[in-house]
Length: 112
Image (tube, rainbow, N blue to C red; front, side):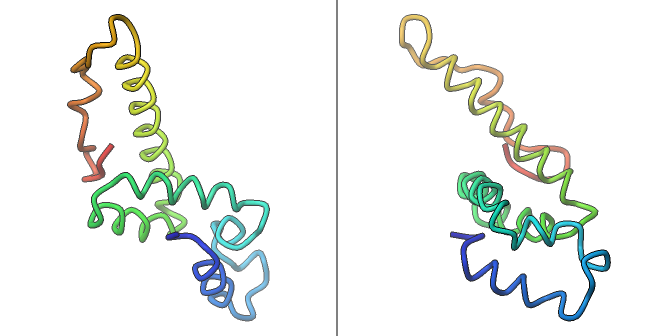
């Protein structure tokens, strides 16, 4: 996947001789085995997007200044999809065209 072993290996080599306090804030999330479930979630969310948007968000995700905004954008998209699935599964089983289906682009160009 996008954030699999090759990503971890490449990211681990990036800080070189930097001390932990000199590394990017996202370094531990990128390489620490304890954060593997985060990397898997990011990969799952990005896989749902068209490649150009997923690639752009993945690049921004690696930068400290964009890490939380991108995370929140992906989480909001996941929540909207989750709510939409609950709506579709409810009632008489008919497909519901909710407002959530129309929310496809964010103000920053991302897709949810």
